[in-house]
Length: 210
Image (cartoon, rainbow, N blue to C red):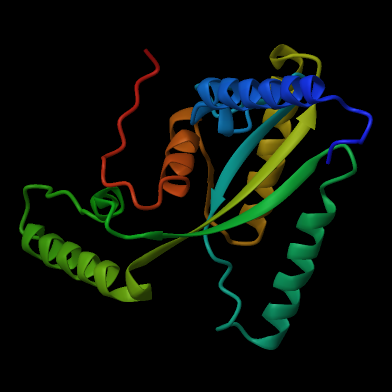
C-alpha cells in the first residue's frame, strides 16, 4: 500500500519500476535458472553452491519383512550404525522416487542377452516374464531409492578426495547390510532430474557433455 505522503508522480514512478522489474525477471528466468545447482561433473560430483558439493548413490531395498526377528534386530542395528556414520560435517538426505515404467530404459535393463548356446530360449522367456511383471507390477511405477550426501569445501580439488572416501564408506556400509548400491555419475544424476521435473514429458532423454 502507498502512504498518503506520496504524490501522484511518485506513485506512477513506483508502478513503472515494478512493471519493468517484473518484465525483466520473466525475460531473464529460464528452466535452467530454476534448477538449484551450479555445475555437474562427469564423475557425479555436483557443485551446488560456491563451497558445497554433493554426490548421489542409488540403493536397493533392504530385505526386512521376510526375515526372522533376530535378523530384523541385526538389520535395524546395522541401519542405525549406518545413519550414525554421518557426523555434523556431512549432510545427507534420502530420496524415494516413484516414476512411470513407460521409460523403456528400465525395460532394457531387464534384457538377458543371448549367449549362443542351448539356453537362449530360456533367457528370452525369462526376459519376457520380467518385462511383463515390470509392466503390471506396482501400478506401472518404478520405485527407486537414493542417498545424497554433501560437504563444504573451498573448491572441487579439495572436495573430490573427501567425497570419494565418504562414498567408499557408504558403499561398504550398504554391503554389510546386504544391500546392492552404486554411485551415480554425472549423466545418471542429470537423468534422474530429467525424469523428476517434467513428469508429463514425452521426449526421450538426450544428453551429451559436448
